[in-house]
Structures are given as C-alpha cells and as structure tokens.
Amino acid sequence: MSLTADEQKMLEGVWPLDLLEDPIRQPRVVTTAAEFLREVLVCEHLGDFIVLPNGIELLGLSEEEVMPEDLLKVLENSKSVKELLQQFQADEKLLSKYKAGVEYIDKNGEQRMALPKERQNLRGRIKEVLRLVDSGEVDSESLYVAEMRLLNAVRHPLDDELVKTVCKRDVKDVIGPLASWTFYWDRHDEGVFIGNRGSGKGVHVDQVLWSNVGKNWRGHKLVAAWPKGAVSNQICKSFDDQLFSPPLSGAKLQALRQAAKIVLLRPGDAYFFSGGTAHTALCVDGMGLSSYESIVTLHPLHSGLCMQTCDTSSPCWLEGAMPDDEFEDILEEAAEQLDAAAQQLLEGGPGVNLKQAKSLDPPMLWKDIRFQVTSNKAAMRLLQEHFAATVAQCLARSHFIRENVTSTVKRALRHLTHGRGLVQSPERSRINDSSCRAPDRAARKRSRSPLRSTTSI
Image 1 (tube, rainbow, N blue to C red):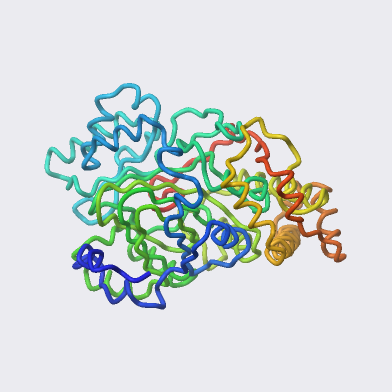
Image 2: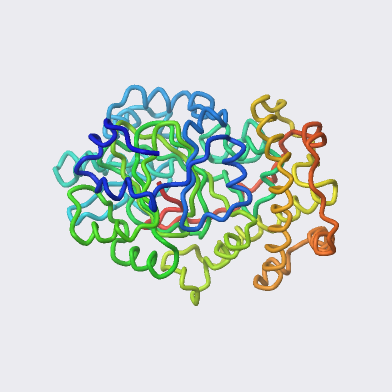
C-alpha cells in the first residue's frame, strides 16, 4: 500500500522514504480474512511479510473483544508508556495480575530490560525504570512494555485451556479446528506490546525459529525484516538489541538497505511473518498496542526451520536460542498437534471437529470464514501434502518426535502417501464447525532469554 501524504509527513526523518516505498520491500497485502488464513496455513513466507489491512475487524478481534477492561482503562488514561507505568505502580490489583518486560534504551543505544532476572516482579521493574528516567539516565520516550502476560495461568474463556495470555480471543480461535493443522501454535504465552513514538523492539531473532501472527490495534509501527541465514546472522551480530531510531548512523542505514521487507503497520492491521530471521520494530505514532501468537506451519520449509532452533551446525542458529531441554517441550506439543491433525484426516479431512468444546457456539463471522477456507479444495489438498512432508521430515530428522509420534500419525502418513487423502467438504465443515478443546500445557515452563525475547514486536 502506498504511503499517504500524512504518513509521508509522519515518517519524514525516521527511516528513508525510498526504502519504505520500494516495491521489492513492500509487504504482500491480502484483502479478506479467508485469504489471510490461507496464507497462514499453507503458504511459504520466509523473507516475506503478509498484511491484512483492517484485519482486526475482518477477523472479529476488536480490542474491546480481546483486551481485558482494566488494561484498556489504563491505556485510555495514558499518553505515554511512562504514564501507563505510573498508573500500574499506583494500582496493587494490576501489579498482582500482570507481568511484563519493561525495556529502555541505554546511553550506548542498546535495549535493556529492567531487572532482567526478576520476571515476576513487575512492581520492581517499574520502580527501577522510573528511577532511571527520573535520574536522567534514560529517555522516557524509549520505554517499551514487552511480552505482557498474566502472572498466573487461568482457563481461557473459549477453549478452557490453561493460559497466561491476556487476550480473550485470537486468530487461533477464528480458525477453529483448522488450528490443529499446524506444527505448533501457542497462545499460552502470547505477549502484548505497548509503546509510544520513539520506542520499539531492538534487532533480534526469536528464541525459537517460528513465525508470528500479529494484531496491531493502535499506533503506527515500522518493521524491518532481513533474509534468513548469513545476512540475518550478521545483522544480529552487528546490531543485537539495538533500536533503529533516528537519526540513523551510516551503518544502520546500510543495514536497512539489506532488509528483505520494510513495512508500515497501521492501526487495525493483522500481519504474519517469520520471527526466525532478524527483525526490529519502531513505534512512530501514538500509543501502540499489539500482540502476537507463535506459530509454526506445516509447510516443510517452516517446520524444518523450526527444528534447526538448537542445531549449532545450522547457518540459522544463533547464540541465545532456546536450550535443548526446553525445546523438547515445543516438540512434545508439535507431536500432539500432528496427532490432532491425523485424527481429523482419518475422520474426514481438515476442519473436522472431533470434540464438542465447552465454549459457546462460534460467531457467524468465524463460521463463514472457516467455511471459505475449507471450501478451497486446492488449499486443503496442499495442507495435507504439507502434513505428509512435515511428518516424513520429522521422522527422518528428529529423534524426539520419532520416539513420541503416535501410530495415528503414521497411519495418516500412509493414508496420504498411498493417494487416499481426503479433502474436507464445505457441507461437513459447516456442520462440524466448533473449536476443539486444546490440552492443558500450563505446567510446562519455558525460561525466556533476558536479552532475546520469545518473539518480536
């Protein structure tokens, strides 16, 4: 999408406009919710960035429907992150309900987290960062709230799963039973990000080589993403945790010119990209509010990239990746996902509901979106082909999954490789349209690197 005159004025002196308007670096724009979800499920997106303008509304994920009332109230009464933190500091209920990283830019231009080892101490983190601001050591404009979650797990209102996300509904809920047709989809630890103009997330690669499905409710945000492999690794080594805020040095300008995609996210956009490559984000207007869900699709390139997370021989590996023992938790959930998809396949195809959820009947908007997605026979066939390719890849490359995969998954693989794969019919999809209950995963604890957050922006 071309920049408007007002956007050009807003961005003047921030990042070079010629890069923002370069057709090669533009995101891939889709126009419908069904098209966006098809991109999420079956398309290859390494080095790409998919945006659904007005996606928040098209997916039925308005901030009023998603965000808790107490957080929205604080946002409405805050003109800056500093004011938001001051409101949190004065409210014991908020301090005992939420946890978050409170980040700032130090005098060397690097992004730091207040009290990085005290992950559950929101009170202490806020106190420390406000002290740094009051002493003149930190510019209040650089303050950024990252990975905000609930302090204690609760039952999600739609699928009864134990979660720490503050969000009451997500893209995972929109897509319903088809969410099982991914290698991994986590919203237990879904993070919320809040920033004002001048703040953002420094250069990093996610701790796991997965992708991010994001919702940008408020504010304009610039995002740069670099090609995977050698370029991405070099950018991370040269600019690790550095925010690309103006004025840009010559080195940062040169780095931006190496980016695969440079994107302006607008209020209301939904987006999708790989967090397994170097990326950074900068808030450029208003108070920003966004969140993400971590996902690995069944496309063999993406599931294959994810499995390289702990492979030190991989050109995509970086220091700070999730440790082996914690990554096994991810693989355990992946094995569960493959089993859920295999059961659907053997019962009739992608989208078949195998369990009646305790939640209310999904909104008609979501039913219609799911119907459009499952009606696309080419996409459903491709989804099954990706399932077969990913299962075969896992059996060949992952000892852990090979030891934990179920006989149902192996039977589904044989079913597909012998050419008997089924394509879900639109009629059955509509009849069986209801979200499956996900297994509880709250007991699995994964530590987060204090220097490299689980995801991005």
